[in-house]
Image (spheres, rainbow, N blue to C red):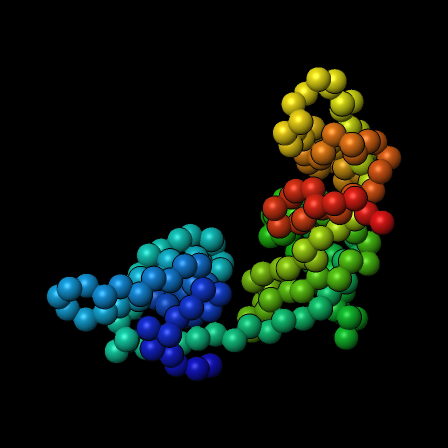
Length: 188
């Protein structure tokens, strides 16, 4: 673990502060007319998700935490748990659906994910940015709609609703952004 000064904290850095693990969401260097400059940092707790705004002066030091990143393969869903397999050691890891959040609907058999570990304990998960899915339901195009970008609702094979352009119909395969849960383009 490395000690860094308060002015070196950048978005994405994981630090130890007040006995907890925090990720820097936003940072803003403030130089008031009177007094020394400081770094205004918005922190998010990695364990319980609470947020905190904190000022760090350049003289203060904090502990920067290095997270281990491991590749896992999604195996199956078991009740309220999702089961993943370590691609190197073949050990299985169970994570609660709540841990993954609403993006759990995008998990597919064999999908590769990256799990962030701190002292062998999972604290975060990254899915692929885009997945290809089939549309099961799509509303028909309404004639006479304006030429402006008008999107219509559609239901994907995993039950998630997204807005798609009018030319997309049921049975087509599309690419969906898993972070924003939005339509990207038609699949090839």
